[in-house]
Length: 553
Ligand code: NAD
Image 1 (cartoon, protein in one colour):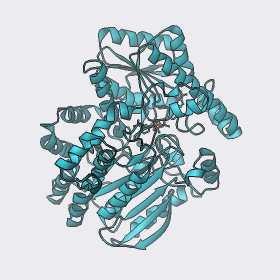
Image 2 (cartoon, rainbow, N blue to C red):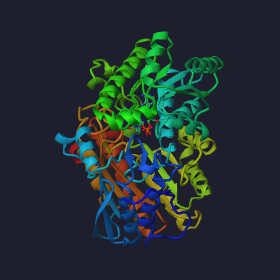
Image 3 (cartoon, rainbow, N blue to C red):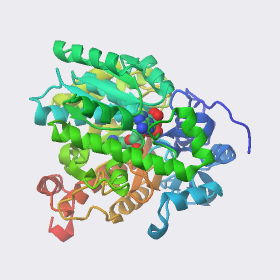
Image 4 (cartoon, helix red, strand yellow):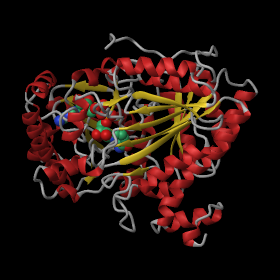
């Protein structure tokens, strides 16, 4: 295996590949591993526990070499982070097709996955790590901001002013929480076991201050609650110790959730009583004991969250499968509180709304500011929430790696945005092409019964035909690269999901791709929900002309 290196995507308009579609894949793979972006680039880990961009450094090198010579009528196949083949296809086909972490259902356990991973045969791709469209914590900030805004609307008259949100985890995704809380006017207390992660979020300007002293943290939080001032406080500690202690003290926050990497009991969650260094040692010396302790800690953590709920707090699961793990560890009441999708996000999914994101391949922030202005003009008047988000994001969100932006757009909006960007590139208003993608957490691209598809109206939570159809359709529609993954968000055995990325390089080929993919992709979200009996989705399908023969639409 070759040595560890520092990776940073090329900027500007000089191509290292034969075309922008390939160049975009190359830069986005590299950008995922940029130290500003990735949580642990030395291990090729981008975010979400052990979510990786390539199987190992040798595979990374081979992918880079292959992308550099890949023709406009060829398609590279990547199997769990390893470039396994190149086939001749055609100019409108995807340039890369990716499958990560997929196991036949009966074998789909972490234990079997780790065995295969140990043999070097498979890689955990999370969602946007192995599909090369992670954009740092900003990617999750807007979703977290929207979710908390929905919490505020449903429970607190529209604002989190004077409300305390207690949560855990300041990693790749969880790091967005403090900023999303303060952007909603609230006070955040975020427990994180790893001091490095805390320092990183404070340095990035995502989190206001930190301490290792619980009393000091509570004093700061209470003061801000009284003054109704936004403030985020990180507390160095373990959720499985601190949260039961808060319950014992009778200290009740207004809102409780969690973003520790509970989906992974070995590579992610840190059991009570261990420092990060001790956890690392136990992980390699006695993995079975580690998992046993980890599961027991998750049960204690979840039990404290249920106790907060009983004491009147608004509690919801934030998509890390803490409830599933706690239940498996014997805590029968784990599912007492809902997941965030049925509680707050599903109405958006019904309209095909989801996390549309784009990246400036020039590396110039000005390109993103220009696209911000165009999106504001095009959609801001009819969508005040989106306008507020774009203004705040421009002010408060530092870029990590290549400059990027995210906002939630629905069916009929995403293709408008994509074609506008392509036009800007064509006219030379932007310095280089724009990459457009999304999280796999989207309206029609995931089957995940403890998260995106929890509590579907028709009981179809675990049916994974939909993300597969989504990937097949986006391939037919000409996405630049398409991926199908297993286990993202909630862990092995719990989810199957798909991603797509499409490049606006100003060409006619790109215009064709964008016009198709940015309709088929959110269209699947509308269709998924309309088929499951959601009336708003059926109305959207009818109103916007999506054909659904089985429903007579
Ligand atoms: P990450 O691995 O980058 O970070 C997890 C953090 O939790 C780490 O900093 C770790 O030190 C900390 N941690 C672990 N155990 C702890 C404990 N017992 N007490 C306190 N801190 C602890 O993961 P991430 O990318 O931030 O993702 C977090 C979780 O959220 C994952 O399970 C992920 O799958 C899930 N997720 C949710 C969404 C969503 O939209 N809600 C999206 C993606 C991922």
